[in-house]
Image 1 (cartoon, one colour):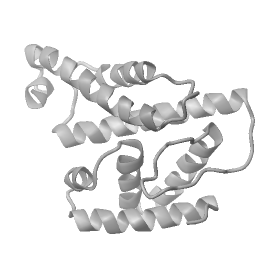
Image 2: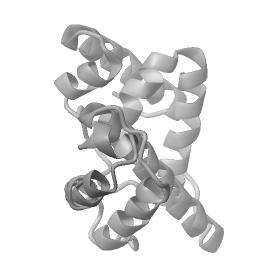
Image 3: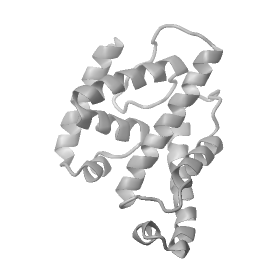
Length: 178
């Protein structure tokens, strides 16, 4: 369906839209189950905004399912960061208090903390673009090691090694104890 939609097949695009929406709902559920209960962005809002950004073009240019996940992860990351920035403007807070657990989940991450992660990830991406992509896909995209390996066309052990190094670098940058 992706290939046909990319070539301009309107019927394939119409069949693809519900599939895209379902995948976005799955990703949003992943994000929101990790969020604190009082998070002001609802899963439905996240899905709808991501959906609009992903299909707001005549023919999506996703090469395959893995590429779709990579694009969706980036869109959702941007949405969460934009939401965090808006909250920061409304409410100023200080100090990083969150732990970076083994899974680097978004659980209990406040706006300021998410922005600090975003800034550190930007620095990491400048230093090591592949590690930056791995963090983005694992942390913001919820992809498994195997899925990240498929998206980046590298081995699973390489993803694991780069993931460990990226987490250690982020912990050091953010001043978070291991």
